[in-house]
Amino acid sequence: MALLQNRILIAALLGWFVAQTLKLPFEYLRSRKWNWGLWFSAGGMPSSHSSLVTATALACGLYEGFDSPVFALSIAIMMIVVYDAAGVRRQAGIHAQKINLLIEELFTGQPISEERLKEVLGHTPPEVVGGVVLGIFIALTLWWVWPPIPK
Image (cartoon, rainbow, N blue to C red; front, side, top):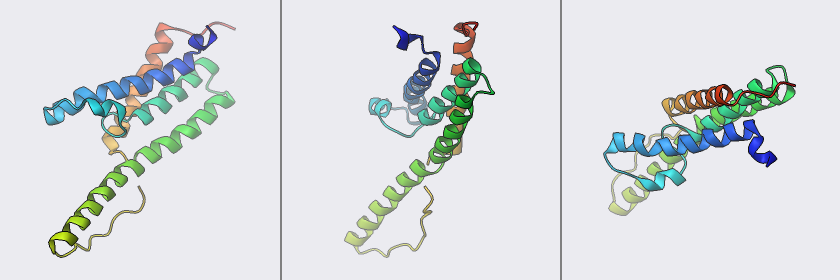
């Protein structure tokens, strides 16, 4: 089946799958509780978005050539996704916490804090770096184990 021969797709899917799977033991080490729902959710260490796009971009370079248009496009997409992962989803969680606190304060009659929320929204930097490093590791390992076919 040709789809199973697509090394770049395999690298991308492995990047995402391994990152999602690693979230479970990382969360256990942090909280001493198994959170199986984390496998299906966004956020956490490592960033699966960052891992997926990094593995894809590096695999494009390794298999198609670092001078190819597909590598250039994959790097551009990687930059957007990693930048977004480092800002949007972390801030969205913080916003949700602040909104919940605001509602709670309104119902209990406590004064509302005046702290301004950051309106540019993501993952923590270590989570993003973890995803990028994991993506690099996966693409290089796949390239080493399953080298390109000479043209």
